Length: 158
Ligand code: RTP
Ligand code: MG
Image 1: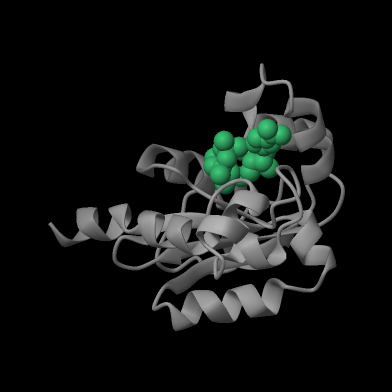
Image 2: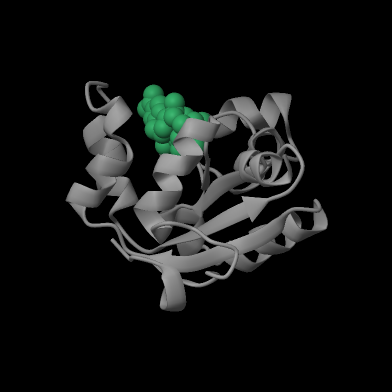
């Protein structure tokens, strides 16, 4: 059924504070569009510490968690809901491995290879599963509908 396949071909992209501060939002946006993905909703958000903890709660017992949370709440992020064939896989391929050093070796054209610094400051986020997409999308944009395109008309800034 058309609606179901459409729903599964979405993912959430975040330009993290390091890449936002380095003014890479426009470049990354253009790469997304050139790759044939559509941007269905987008906006700038500032996460406070509690929101960053909630967003990354699956990692709450990891040793890097406090560093991750303070980084993600250190400045604005730019969030985009992407749609297109195999959006989750496609966007994960575009961003490359979590560690930019590894990305520079294995996937030198990836976004993290070009714009990332280290394991924490790695420029972008991409949802890892459809379940994550639904959770993360709700976190930033509330219940998404085809009509709701911008934070101003549809989204719940955290
Ligand atoms: P993301 O969720 O941000 O798209 O990244 P990912 O799937 O590639 O990696 P994940 O395992 O979900 O980790 C989430 C974020 O935590 C930080 N991290 N630091 N060893 C470390 O210091 C370490 N490992 C992960 C990164 O910012 C990573 O993107
Ligand atoms: Mg992840």
